[in-house]
View 1 (cartoon, rainbow, N blue to C red):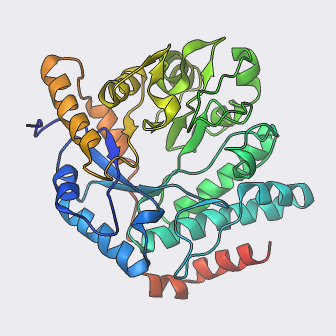
View 2 (tube, rainbow, N blue to C red; view 1 turned 120 degrees about the horizontal axis):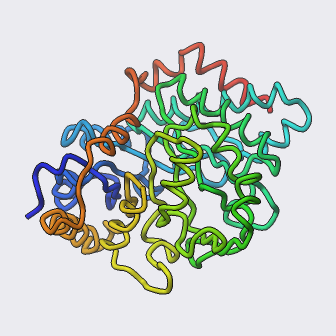
Amino acid sequence: MTDRNPDHAPLIIDVAGTALNAADRRRLADPLVGGVIHFARNWRDRAQMSALNAEIKALRPDLLICVDHEGGRVQRFRTDGFTRLPSMRTLGELWMRDAMRATQAAAACGHVLAAELRACGVDFSFTPVLDLDHGESSVIGDRSFHRDPRVVAMLARSLAHGLLQVGMSNCGKHFPGHGFVRADSHVAIPVDRRSRKAILADDARPYDWLGGTLAAVMPAHVIYPKVDARPAGFSSKWLQHILRGQLGFEGAVFSDDLSMEAARSIQGQLLSYTDAALAALDAGCDLALLCNQSLGDGKVLDEVLEGFAAARRDGRWKPEAIREARRRCLLPRGDALGWDDLMRSPAYRQAAATLSSI
């Protein structure tokens, strides 16, 4: 039996299909769950997605409904009227030709992205990517705005402004930077052997410059051995001493997906899903992301829910009100326009026209 009053809902989970089943409903009702992340498999069309999200909110109005919807090759919803958003590299290339037009396009991208998602009941997207394009990382690649951290910061600020115009928060990722390493952390454990000084002077600079803009940050599943033997998402040095202490970040910190190969391996030890989530929170994350575990029997999600309840009873995990406050700050501001009203909105139409011209 899970604790009914945890004072902090740290788990972001997924649901199996295009409508909720009984197991989904049971898990979403658990007070340890703070949000849902959608994938392409959860999408059929706008009406279905809107109905799915309405059912989720009927169960728990405070749940944060999330998606990875950046533009380019990472865009979960692409049909039934959704705008095909440009890659961030496209915006960076535009910057090299016309910087002012690029900032305008980045703001338009954020506006369209957020407005279309909110019209279907999605609260939050994990964007913008702040990784620098070193030309090494296939998993980042054209998801990056640019090699120059100044360009990345300016375009990310503009995109975040566009999100905010529609009441959506933002999430800078992947702290302190994933673009320098070649390995894909979905299947391996990347290692970046640069010094702390080199990383902070280059890849991590956008996090410093955007400190007052970023609502959330997601750390990289990358090991930086000159700083810590643990991946950044499990490192109190990176999350508490550097991100919060040195850079002064006060928003929410998400773990990256703890289902990934690099996600549960710490100093040669493969942790259980529960222990990995607890380790991420102990290091400084406020929210732990568990993706694609609702498929099949969903055994992993049930084990984690039971494991967290047991950890609280045993004193291995103590909920903190400030962490719950950070999660709730990510919920959208203001009412969203329905799709038909959105299509008539002058602000949306102008933003869409700006995108279509690049």
